[in-house]
Picture (cartoon, protein in one colour):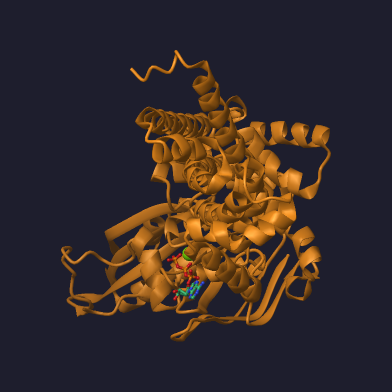
Length: 343
Length: 224
Ligand SMILES: Nc1ncnc2c1ncn2[C@@H]1O[C@H](COP(=O)(O)OP(=O)(O)OP(=O)(O)O)[C@@H](O)[C@H]1O
Ligand SMILES: [Mg+2]
């Protein structure tokens, strides 16, 4: 649905050239919620603004539903933009208009006949749960309500994709969750493609199917959210994952010595559970089956979008054969595992 | 105190002069906005990175505006007499005053409008652009409505300025309260008339400011 190909954006200021995006490529499938995460200044906003040409890319192309955005004449670009919804961190609602008129705004721009437009606005306000606020002004709304208006407005012209630039960053955690739930609901109901950027891994965890990690103008990692959570490949990703799920053994916990011990070996491993494996009593059956000792040092269970997911730091000891067999048993049941080196 | 009631002739003189001032100011406010408002919009829209970015147009218009604004009004008044004559056939009286008043107010209005429009958050403009708005839609649906309270205050400031300018024009025969004060107050040493014009001007200015404030507050109040 969205094809970004070798996108480069250089800002030229009087004093210097800033490379905000360096040869970025990604592709977002139809009906997917795709997240982009990165630290402040990484180039996230630049990327999302290049997609609807609010910024003109220096090099590369952006193709949305078969239309090459970089090649459009101003007039065609405006028409194409009507089918790309966008929501913003600071909502950007018009203070001069009521909630109703704010949602009407994009329909006015598109020249939708009044009767149809009014009907559409009513539908949208129902959808976002603000039918009773139609005649309020934005300043009379809470942040969460404002963002709902923003979402209704972005959906007015039935866009093909929805772009979200830090749409929950100005909201408290609970409101953030309700907005993400609304986005997920819209995504499911209308099979709407959503590209969202954030610096909060929680947002990715709760709503996205895939994620690209952007660091210093480049994509350093891209994959299914579950994969990035279970085995982050770069330091940047590890630190983002670490902000949400603690993978590391906390320092204050005593670490048992590993390796050769009296009567066998001891291994320290980190196991990650995904989906249905998280629900199975694999550890206890392993203990019974192979007659090893297992001790859970640290654990953490959570959900990624709708999939259960967790980490467990486990100490397993027994005879070398027993331990080796137990580990392959766990692996055989689809658990990701990682040996923790002796500290 | 000023013994005006006893002199019906003088009372009607004052009333006519007041009316002339109001008339001059109203007409020149109208015409100065007719040109100054679009000019202010263009000044904003043609700045770098804005919806109609155009360095050349912006610099040329900006320089003209600055040039006119840097000429003191009393000199401007004399400077453009030929033009005034050309347009109105005369250079004294209320109708003739409207020409210099309007011309002097246009750049003033343009800068006021520019300032009001520049206060608008760029995010709002960007949101409209992201929906596919064209430049005209951004101007008519975002810039002007969002800046309305501030624009209304600008109109009040312009009117008040023009009241002052019209008094200056009055001294060189422009009519209105200025002429009245000059003839009777200055040339004939009738202090009473002088004070009456001062009080009338004061009331006019207060009234306009109050009206402007109320209207602006009402507009932004509705949005609050
Ligand atoms: N209009 C501009 N002119 C010059 N430099 C810019 C401009 N916009 C962004 N930059 C620079 O480009 C880089 C990337 O900025 P961008 O806004 O895309 O970051 P971001 O990842 O969205 O950060 P944040 O999380 O703070 O919003 C930064 O170094 C920024 O200073
Ligand atoms: Mg940003």
